[in-house]
Length: 27
Image (tube, rainbow, N blue to C red; front, top):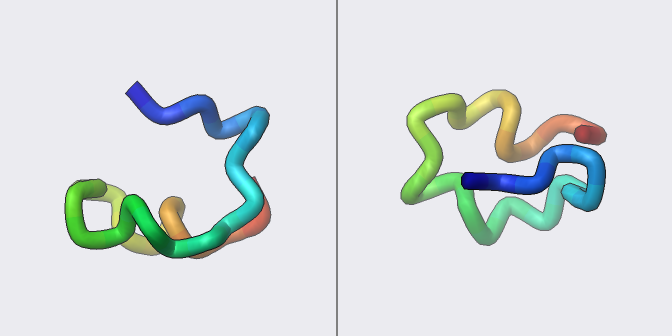
């Protein structure tokens, strides 16, 4: 699980995340 509240949009999870846009947004 990804803690979106702590996510700063670093993009590290983008390859593993099915929600690619969400991995790169502000939250």
